[in-house]
Image (cartoon, rainbow, N blue to C red):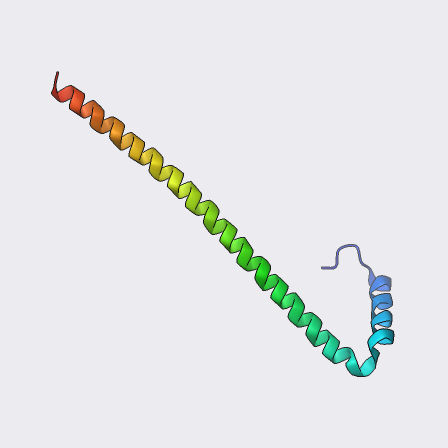
Amino acid sequence: MFGSIGFPELMMIFIVVMLLFGPKKLPDFAKMLGKAIREFKKTVNDAKSTIEEEIESIDISKDLKEIDKNIKEITYLDEEEKFK
C-alpha cells in the first residue's frame, strides 16, 4: 500500500504529525486527509473513465468508417456487374 515506506518511517511520520498538530487536532487532521484522498481517488477515476470512453468512441468511429467504405465498394462492384 505504501510502497517502500516501512514501519519505522510510518512511526517517524506519526511522531512529526503529533508534534505539529497535537493530539487534540489529530482527529480533525485525519478526517481532512481522508476527505482529500477520497476526492483525489474520485477525480482520478472520473478522468480514467472519461479517457476510456474517448478511446472507445475513437475505435468505434474507425470501425464505422471501415464498414461504410466496404459497403460503398460492394455497392460499386454490384452496379458494375449489372452493366456487364
